[in-house]
Image 1 (cartoon, each protein chain N blue to C red):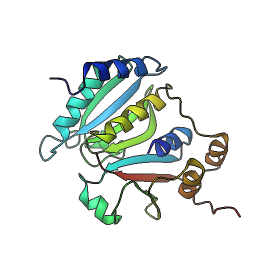
Image 2: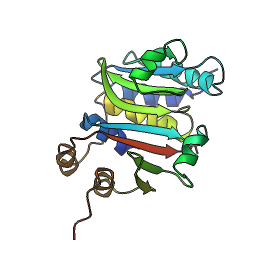
Image 3: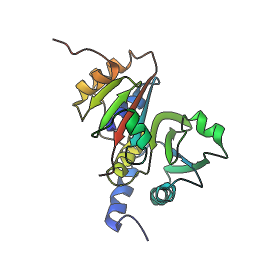
Image 4: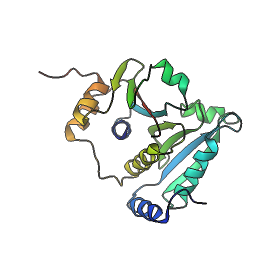
Length: 143
Length: 67
């Protein structure tokens, strides 16, 4: 059974149709001890069924430790977004459910060049001055 | 978090990690997350709640407010 209604699927299909680049979601999983990995897999499957612009690559945290470490992910479920093979440095830890589902969709659209929301010129100017690594961690809840 | 992701897309030096506080209690506890959204930058700067873009960007970059 689908998690999304037919009308939600159509809305998302229309949004993804504007994507100019293909977004790869690297999905870091763990077979044992990951309560929300199955849920995350179902959500990602729903997205890939809607568009060819989203590709999912599953990486096992235990069996493919190096690949996960390369992406800086040490927990499951963890998501890393790549565009045309290039790292976007966008990560998500935990199932992209509830409110966070739309956050994932928003991140995909932004990475795929299909978002109407852009940073201001002022913000872009300030970001151009960043020379040291900055790790922004945003804590959220699904509701 | 839309802002944090867009900042990561804009700057190669920025990584944006969205963390489900309910799934990763240890991280939520480490950063004393009592409400969401809570942003932590380089394990030091803490931003509580949602801020308008200019304020959020400055806070993340550690730039003091002007005036």
